[in-house]
Image (cartoon, rainbow, N blue to C red; front, top):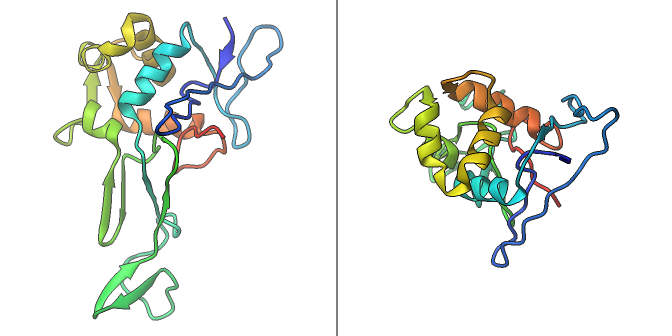
Length: 186
């Protein structure tokens, strides 16, 4: 069983060509997560991981160039906003041209707001956790092995996955160690 970066998959629209990248390991163990090395987990099926990625990924990801450091109080020395027609518009960036799993559940750069697709599907109505049975139901198209691989990659808990735990894990899985997006392979 190859060690793969879980969900390190790119769906190139419109071809939907999924690419999985491997990392060499010593002694059969995975590569530890760090800012320069993404976390790894064993996968039984790349097709199942691709199906889960397709269900949960976003085509566009909103990024906050201030990385949460701007207080949004329109400070005179702030370089993160401009006035347009008398209203503050804060600088933002967008990831496009691929598919991503944003590590942040919600990104707000006024007047824009993005709720990650994985949040909308797994944690609807401001839920903070999802049960294993609901997780399995939502991700059923990926098959039982794929769902089990995804669960094990995201949590060690037997019955409940918390939203903040998933966000943290996606950040660890990000190929660049970035907090804004998890696993975009080029």
